Each structure stands twice: as C-alpha cells, then as structure tokens.
Figure 1 (cartoon, rainbow, N blue to C red):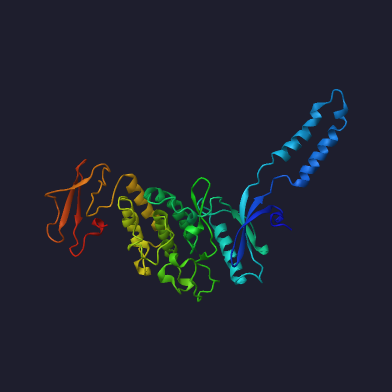
Figure 2: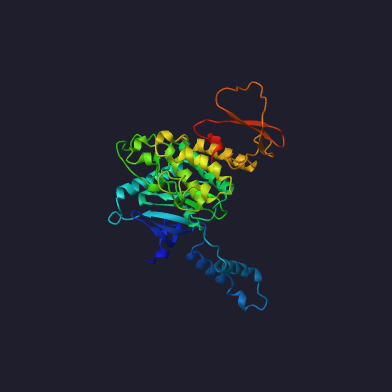
Amino acid sequence: MAENDRMFGDRWRVVRPLGKGGQGQVYEVADMGGLASPDDLARALKEGLRNIQQEIHMVNPDVRKFDELINAIRVVVAAPDAPRAALKQLLPVDEAVNATTALARMKAELDALDSVGHPALVRLLDQHIEEHWYVMEYFRAGTLDKHPERFRGRVLDALLAFRPLVEAAQALHAAGIVHRDIKPANVFVADDGHLVLGDCGLAIKLDNAERLTDTFENVGTRDYQPPWTYAMRLADVRPNFDVFGLAKLLWAMISGRPRFPLEDFDIEPHDLRRMFPDEPGVLFVHRILKKCVVRRETQCTIPDAAALLDEIDKSIQALRAGAVVPTTTGKMRCRFCGLGIYQEAEAFAVSGSRQSGSPRRYYCCDHCGHLEFFVDLGKQAPPAWTE
C-alpha cells in the first residue's frame, strides 16, 4: 500500500510524512470525516445517469431530472479540500528506541492535553492509545525555530505573542502538570500568526503517586533545562522548571537566535542590551531573565507561570505607557502620568523624608511635576538604576 493511501481509524488519510524520530513517526493527514468517499461519488454519478438516460432522447426532456447528475458532477469537480491534521504514531517495538518509555510518554502527553484546554496549547483531535497513535492540530508554518527573525529586536511584539504561551503554561501548572520541554522547536506558528505550545511528551503530573520518584532523568534540550535539575529526581521537579525554559524562549524570540548556554544571558555575545542598545524595552526583559535564568533553584524568584505572567503584564503595561527602565545613560518616563520625563532635581525639601542613611537622588517629572527618588545602595548602583 502506498504511503498516501494509508488510513487511520477510517477517518485520517496520510498525505505525507513530516518527520521520524527514534520513537515515532509524524504524518500530515487529511480529515476525511464528513467528506464523500470515492465510492460514494461513483454511486452518485451512476444514480444520476440512470435517472436521465431516457430523458436525453426526448425532444422536450424534463431538465429537472438532470439536477442530481449536475450536483454529483459538481462534487467531483470541486470537491472541498479535506482539513489537515498531524498524526503521531509510535514505531513498532522492534524499531523503536525504548518503546516502553515512548508509550508512557504518549500516555502522559494525551493526559496533559485532555486535562487542559487553552487556545495557546495544541488541540487533541483524535486518539487511539491502544493502537499507539493520536491526531492533533497541524500548523503549516511549522515551529518557531523556523522563523528566527519573526520577533527579532521587537520587544513589545515579542511580549504580546509570548504572553499566551505563559498563560498556557499557567493552565498546565494549575492542573499540577509541568511541561519540561519548552523551547522554540516545540512552539507552533498558527496561520493567523499566534503561537501555540505543543509537544507535551515529557510532561509530568506533580501529584502522580505511581511515577518512579527515585528515578533520575535529564530531559529535553540541555540548553533549555535548568542547571539545578541535572540528575534531579522526578519527585523534586517544580513548575519553576518551565519558568526557566519560558524565559529562555523569550530571549530566543527577541534575539533571533536559537539558544545560549546555561544561564549566561548577560555575557557577550548573548546580552540583549548589547544586541539592541537603542531598544529600551530589552531592559524590562533583562530584569525578567535575571529572576528566571539562574544556576541555583534558590535564585529563581519566580516560582511558576502565574508569577511570570504577572511580570510579563507589568512589562507590557509599562512599555505601552512609554516607560523605560532608568539607566546611567538615559532617563525614565514618569510612572504617574506616562507622558513626562524625570529630570534630576537640584534639591527638594521632602516632608517626612529621612536625610540620614542611604543617599537619595531626586527626580521631578517635567510634565506633571511628580516627584520620585531612588536610593543609592553605596557599594553598587541601585538595581533600578542599572542596565
């Protein structure tokens, strides 16, 4: 049987293979459900011809009897294009790499997709776990790693496109599920341009008492895996695993590059501030990366996708208002009116302010007069006043 003649579940016809790995094969398939089969079309044509075979010899034929044949021909000539989907099938046991693990991961992925529904999470369309295959949405544009320039240097656009992915991860975390493999190659680009998180094959349920809690497992792409999880027990995995990957994904979207090693986002040549020195929005992203992309788990101050979503929303709100992170070389837009720029003040008599302790730098908005001050920490510049 030819590859494109294969059918799965009397509904899905193989169009072409999309890729093959050590554990499974992925196909583009056509959804034949609801469409007339070739046999149905042939029967309709025969029936139409049978109804008019006498009329065609009449001097004044009843043209109404031609309607069925005309409609049947229209269906054949202008048959609608069957909707496309992606079907994943596990390889036979004798061909697969660790077939038992592959089946367990397929079950975990189906469980995750069944448990959580979100517009930015790939939709499950059909499944036959007993036959080792399932069907999900198909995205003609492929994955985000095939579009490195899509958001390059455009911070606000990247944050707006990134936000639904964080929402999808938040939905997984709320259901007690950690994705564990968030990276550009697992993010699909839909026809309308929005991003969709897929490939939940490494997802685990945090409250699953049946999993092997003493098993050590390194999973996913190493550069997107938190350093503190190397050789970590599955029982110790937390949602901040995904926070690390999400933050690196945001970096990849803005940088237009696939990855950087470990947590080295702030050194050359990976520093967004150096890549885009004229884009003040990267300073907001840099602050997020500092909270997420760290070597030790205790340094990760954003515990899950819900907390990361809050950080993203704050940054989007500030950028839309024209705000910037203050630096030693630039000014900050007023956080009160959003229109003026803070200008350093010579001196101000501030009621109730303490003159002792850490020195302060006072700034006044040149539009509304709002007064702001920043505390000098002495040994180093204040976190809010550095790049």
